[in-house]
Length: 225
Image (cartoon, rainbow, N blue to C red; front, side, top):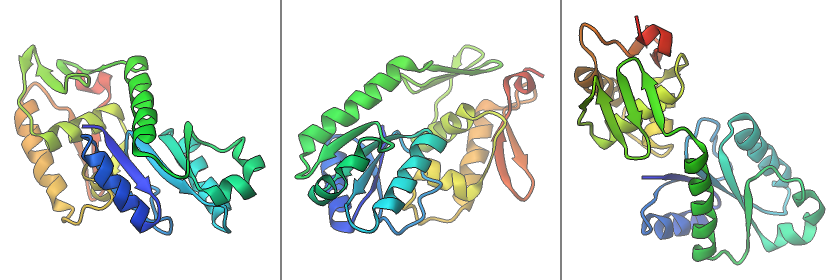
């Protein structure tokens, strides 16, 4: 299931969350004043107004788009279009939608970005005998299919997409469970333990525990040892 993150005023965020979830997306929301520096999503939707918050919004989008390399669609208000037209020419985003916002237009633009990305990216993640087919959401170990729950698969896919990088429990909650998840961070430990029981044994070790910090997925050369 593709994940969308919506940064907008509460009413607008709730509206799009309802509409896009009805189309099969998993949606998470935040208001502009919240810290969204650790969000993870296939596409981020950000409301762009022409008020004094414009500069802060532009800085946020620049960070998400250029530093985090997330796909981003700017939802541009009439006010921004009127007062900030010149600055919007170089706004850091993949695409725009203009107010009044239309669900069907937004769906087309989101699906185009996701479709382009799926064709451009390598759809197989490998580490030793482990193969993750991200197109079909399938996992194989030594040629044998591994049965994972949705969260186990999403956790494995995320970690395997960033080999060698350590993620804290809070970061994994934000990336895999979503920014608005209210459960405790020990749920990460539980899912890691279940995931290890399915993909690790005496000859396979893919996930390392970084003491008092979090978890990391081993790089290819480490997984082969």
